[in-house]
Image 1 (cartoon, rainbow, N blue to C red):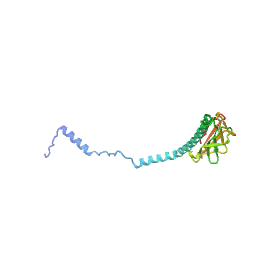
Image 2 (tube, rainbow, N blue to C red):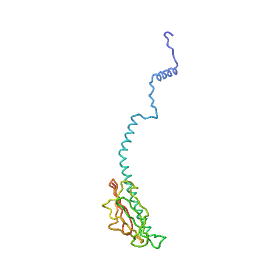
Image 3 (spheres, rainbow, N blue to C red):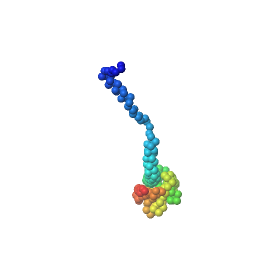
Image 4 (cartoon, helix red, strand yellow):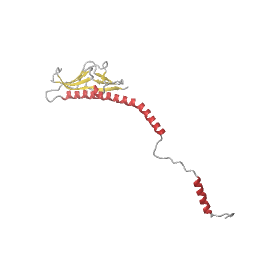
Length: 195
């Protein structure tokens, strides 16, 4: 073996070269799947905090205005129901009875009443139900300057009598208002001005 070279078949040389190349290669760094880096988590938390800081006041305002809408629509429903009761009459007496909605501006409540007799004008009232605006939120009140009347009498023929204008204004602490308007034919509607 001294000075002679050993000859390898050509297929063996190629395999030897490939093995040597593979042994000298540096293995690729593997990335472990299924985790986040601390930086990625901090970025996501920062985005969530920013969106929450912007969205919370808007959500709170929407909820408060939604309470005002609910209170106003409930009042409109009560007015319409009182009108229907007056027109439908009463099976226990002859004739129909006058039905009333009385506002109490000091306590922010209203009472549904009906006349105990069939006389018009009625002098003896029976309370059916008292409702308080605080059931929809403590910030909802009657707007004293804009509420024009506090008594609405629904007649058996479907009309309504009231003093001044048939307007009631509800306000919340956001400055939003709901204006209930009752016309002489007993129709009650509501208009909203949301802030």
